Amino acid sequence: MADASPDTPKMTASRLLTRLVRIASGLHTSDALRIIVLGCVIGAFSGLLAVGFYASLNALQDLLLGRIAGAPMPAHGIVALTASTSSPLYIPLMTTITGALIGLCMRLILPDSPDLGTDGTDIVIRAFHGPTGRVDSRITAVRGAGAILTIASGASAGQEGPISLIGAGAASWLADRLKLNARERRTLLLAGAAGGLGAIFRAPLGGALTAIEVIYREDFEADSLLAALFSSTTAYSIFTIFFGTDPIFHVPDLKLRSVTELPFYVLLAVGCSVAAWAFVAGFRRVKYHFFAPLRRRIGVVGATALGGFMAGVVGMLFPQLLGGGLEWVELALHGDLPLMALGLLALGKTVDTALTIGSGMSGGMFAPSLYVGGMTGTALGTLFHTYFPDIVTRPAAFGIVGMSVFFSCATGASLGPLVMTCEITSSYGLLVPLMLATGCGLLLSRNVSLYDNQLPNKLASRAHTHEAAVNLLKGRKVSELPLAPAPPPLLESTKLGDLRGLVTSSQALCYPVFNAQGAMTGIATLSDLREVLYETCLFDLVVVKEVARAPVFVAPDADGYEALLTMLDTGLDELPVLDEAKGVILGMLDRRALLGMYRPRPTIGGNAPGTPGLACS
Image 1 (cartoon, one colour):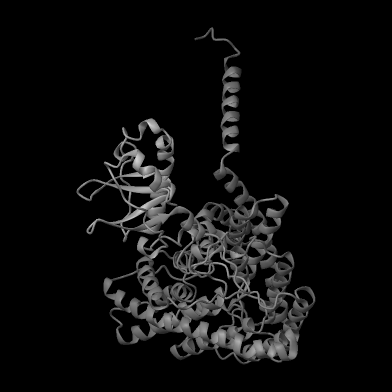
Image 2 (image 1 turned 180 degrees about the horizontal axis):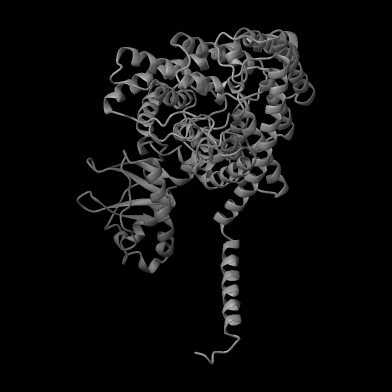
């Protein structure tokens, strides 16, 4: 051992390097590695953009609301509910100017986009389900800058919508530079949105799950989960370098103390579902029944300016509604707000948000949802505590659960908001009531949807056209599908010579074969018969039984998609539909007819993506 060659360590390092190169070469072709790298890259972009967005918003908000308007903010140590601004008239003035500027930018820069959706998150959903999965950079710029002005001036809106859009816009830009296809671009789009959410809320897992879940009401985009996780983690890491890892809410460590509390969480789910319905219904009525007709009369600039003015007046009268307002939710969770104030603030935030976002100003709906859900949950928890103090001991727990359940009821997303609520409060002791209340809330609000462009599931999305095609057959009985007339049945004992005239006069491709007792024993295909049909020397020697295949058929109540798979597996172009009870062939299932159902049928005005019953090319 002492006489070992001095070159041995060098050879060992060389072998190790060679092995690493081989591993890297194998990973080079791995789709998973490609997704991971792209997720990390767009996460870095999203994290840096979130840092710039957050810093700009805080600086401008401190200037406009703090120094100019003197608005009472809990973060500044002013916590009195009845406190008023030192210069209240500045608030409606600032929000009106902001609304006019946003409307002017939309008219000049985005004249062909009258209604892009509810907020930035809805624009991302729209882009994902669109034909190319691309976000217009002009939309990202106008909406992102407009959101900073909207929130900083005091109008009611959140940060998550615009930062999701900014992250998705960066992903779309990067996908174009890398010349990615539409499928990869959509994956990167959700990764960018996840990065923005994970960074701005300091909730990497909740941000990733919410991004892939919120685009559907009853589904989620599992194919994008890996990219979303790495993007959100990267963005979160970059963001916390500048702003730390402290959660958004600093609340006591709460947990479920007894199962006797669970029925009250079910009642909480009922209350949150009603509040979510009122929130969504009020927003849609303000947007479509008030501002939409008004926009046609006075233009987009006038409508957004009026919306800004009205939101500013509400904020001037009730400073607790200014901006995102999550600081006031934290006060509520600490028990510093009375029951009446909790209810009034939840109602006021609903109205103020509808005026802000419904008029066309920029911002997100997630923070207002947390606000209304937190106030509603805390109010119900306080009410339960008043009458059942021995069972409901901590109303704040109901406020935390209410934030998650309210947003789930409004959007249909379940897992993402649940996890994000745990992350932003740094409290994981309420998982059981969170799951119970979220499940109950979703059952009660199946027809409620905050986002205009949200689809029910993958089968309704252009991103999954091939899966939508499968849906045309799956769940439909064979008897409900178009069937060709049954060909003349053949007996096993029929001689080849007697068969020639029958086959040449028929258009069938497959012929069922029966025995003397009337049972189907085989199937003869035209391609098999061609091999012997013109051999005259075999006419009296060969019978049908000798050239027939094993019997293949489908029942009338069989699934249409399973029948198509049987065709593909056997290579048959037709399948007999056999009623075994009666021993009768009802017709032939033709593969060409089934595939013809997938071809697009032109209609006047075109078809909306995901229209049920229509084929997708």
